[in-house]
Length: 300
Image 1 (cartoon, rainbow, N blue to C red):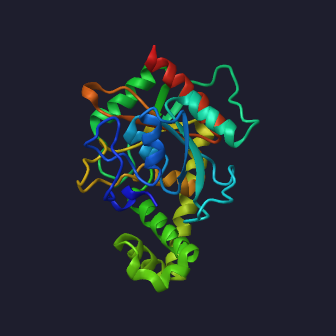
Image 2 (image 1 turned 60 degrees about the vertical axis):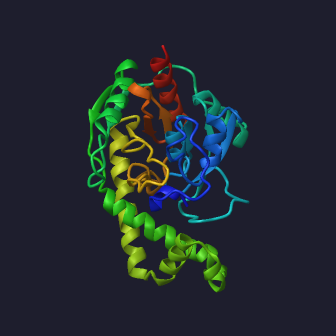
């Protein structure tokens, strides 16, 4: 479970190499910190609602949420099997590609040009406004690469976060029901989630599945018109440690419901600001090819 999904950092959270005052992410924080600190060339994490992309964004590195089911999760402790994915983190797109080859030896991103077109999701409805400086950083990166970006509608963040919360807690309870006799030994957050998962009704789960279907339809329609979709990974700067944060997964959770791949890619921003672009597409190869173009343009 991504720490930020409950908007509170855990005690003993590692320091963010980009800014030690700020939260470095969530359940794949250690992987993002290791890469950002130069202790690992490639790291791996899990992403159920944003747990690769959010730490990557917080720490100024790249992280790839893979298509649900593409990378086997055998041996990975389950949370919500219908959402759980494994993916790589690295300092740049090349390192993420290397991580994919370590998972899937035949993986290759085709060389050659890709369409410089994107659907620009400026914000998710009801998520709260994204920091204009982060939106501007994403826009400048697209402009530097010569990408023609067309505004497209987002999703209802409240509905998405409610649905994914139901799915995670329901499946998380099934995965961890054996812990129920030991509730008093668990942290308050884990205890609360397990207890909620036990109380959820078939009607609750059905409503969540309807939202998941609607999100998949939305992405199918958008990706029929554009090769990729882009938006910030986070609404704002990573929260300060100990600070009550904003909804860190407001812009990431919908991708998990859709089962699609998405890349979190750092982009330059003024005054030491941490900014990240999220690239969503039909395949890992497509989002990484697009990420290559953006990365080369902002580093030129």
